[in-house]
Length: 343
Image (cartoon, rainbow, N blue to C red; front, side, top):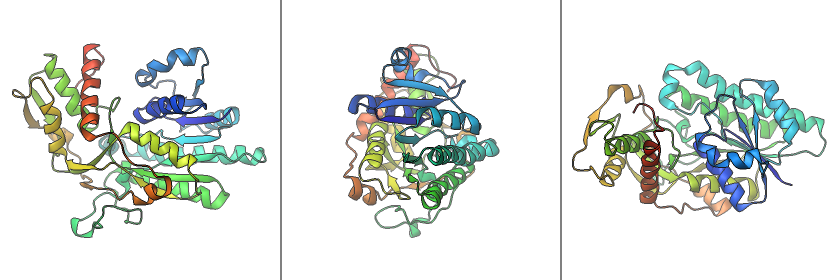
């Protein structure tokens, strides 16, 4: 039986990837999670976990090398999707050391664990996806941005400790492919969202606040940060399909790809779209909250995904409007169940 190991299975992307693999393959799915990881995003899978029905959870931490070695030795996955990270750019400004340790050294620990198990088991050669981020490109001046968008060869100019950590993650993936003959591919995924998106991200906190306003829990005011940043959006369900195709469509060791959606707009346009879907759209006001502003922002996030599309045939399929409606409905359901924190 084919085995896939997903680090960060309890996150938005990890949980959707598990859903995709369970629905579209016959693989067994092994999820790595920390003992303190919230299970909200995978609560629909817990019955299957308890019944050992193709879904298994193993406890490990990117900051504990022995736990990673133990899991890799036990599972011996055919495919590894390394999605776990400290993934919040704004948080990284106040927790830079934790961000760098988790994302750079944590990735190194995982790849070392896999390399060790490969050396101990002749013929074992898993296919590994290391998830970096479009944030590695950071602040690209408008006059230096390629005509067709940011391609793989654009220089890195990270604009946060998180982005710096993902530069390290990106380079580690390529290093292990080149140095140890490991089949590692790296992705720089641009903004991707949808149901289960964390509320520290702009479009998700907009949707959450709107849902709370509709429920009468807060005044009709949406607090925002920088609304002038340009973003290209993809749906998380398209993203996980891309990750599956990455590891199954003629994987090339050491390759690196930009992946992203096809709909580009300013953050303020995203806010206006979400407000337009609200039952209280005529009453909602918008207020800038200084605490939501980054010291530096990556403000021209438009990808050129032609390399990945040419290699795999992948194309985004879910319209931007459906993504945003589904995100808002997700938060409406969460609020109705009382599953929310502060805005």
